Length: 357
Image 1 (cartoon, rainbow, N blue to C red):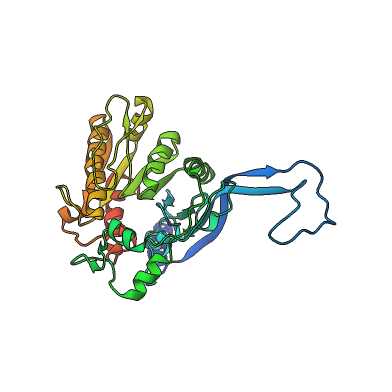
Image 2: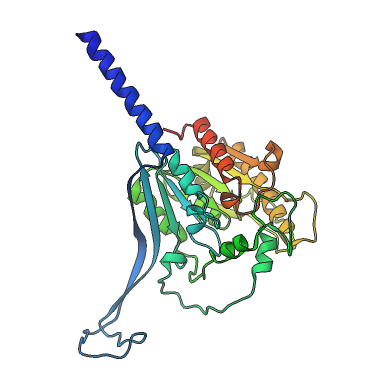
């Protein structure tokens, strides 16, 4: 009887494992939704008079309130979810949509990770995308800048695409890509606090950052011990301990310099695994091309950042994709044609550092 019971339990466990694997492949969602984190509320003095009508855009503000400065979060939790959720943080000029999908409708990076069992929390930082309600006053005007970003993001040198680029070269894709950009209504003082609010809301988690969102990731990991790892795709800036900040590196787009933090704060980055990924078309020598120069200096500073973390006992890895035989990636690696390859690389790294539980 005992043997029959043991066999039955084993069969049930095998069925559960197979169901989980199948569920991940077919993207079975256990729970999904959205919410906001952080934010402030303005409250005008006086008593609200609901008999007054001024207009739809203009209001008599006496006694009324205004909520803003929050971040928007869209989350999805798969069947048989892994332990650590992934928090996706976008860069400058965009929103969380860059993680959710690609301009041609392929699986977004968050979806690829979701299929592998990772709960995903995609943020729109305060003042961007679906979190556009802010208390910060700013003037928004249409600036024709798409050719500039085409170059900066290493898609090519306008109007020519880089040879072998993993970015689709048809006009429809390019149009959809640029239409993902969003106005920036933030003063950038609330990004870190909103990330920390989300981490505190959901518990132990892993940050996945892109570009200008990178520095917010470093600072959030420093301030919150519930951050169990950081994945950074081409971060734009880095922190260093006081007294060990490298000399600034000059470049055509203004160069880059390290951000000084206390040794106590910096050492918190040595207590978690960190990985950074950089794509293609980044030269070692000075160039007269905007995109080349912008990322040449940031990659060089990134190497110093990784070395400094490891010098102080950390576990940091820099992956320069062309050096491992992965070619053609732009600055928007997570949306490139080979984003599935990059997701597999990340999953292997999670397994290596024990973040795949």
